[in-house]
Length: 221
Image (cartoon, rainbow, N blue to C red; front, top):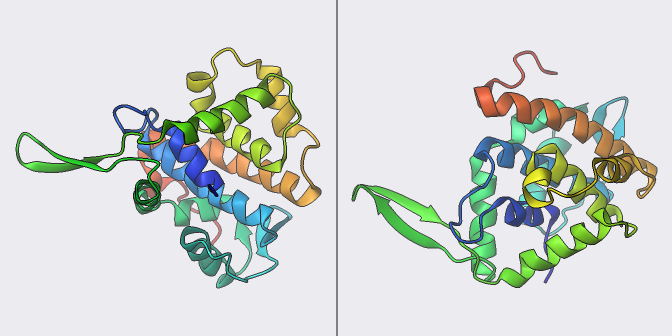
């Protein structure tokens, strides 16, 4: 089954039984945006020049969530990664990806009510094998296996949003740093990881206390 980095991250961030995030929703949302930026970089659509994200190839990827972001960025002048994390982050992406994973049979979609009045939706796992395989790949790399570009990006994002300690509490911190800063990726992707890491640490820290709407009061305009 083809699955994007954002979908992998979303599965790791959701409790398989309750179907709800096991870190703050704000942290999930901003990290999903970072995952989309990283995925498009891996696909050869972006490069990073002096801290700014530039479009190399505006050709659609065929993935609706990726292509929405690609169109928005292609229509703009080059801007810093933090600008795009702020501009593009919203809960809609998380819900769209949850629904998509449910349609593919990875998650279940369960509706209910709170106090008999307020409608709720949660997404517990239906096929645990998908997340189990993602965890195995990450665990193998944390235990010493050589990562590919996608796993390097995923490990970086997992650490940046605070999932690492929850999912892999016995992972050696120096191994995580080695993966994040190592030469497992080409120069363009390596630069993307660096830029995204700097941006996401700030965004996650601020979003969990202020909300995404106020992350960057005077960002690149």
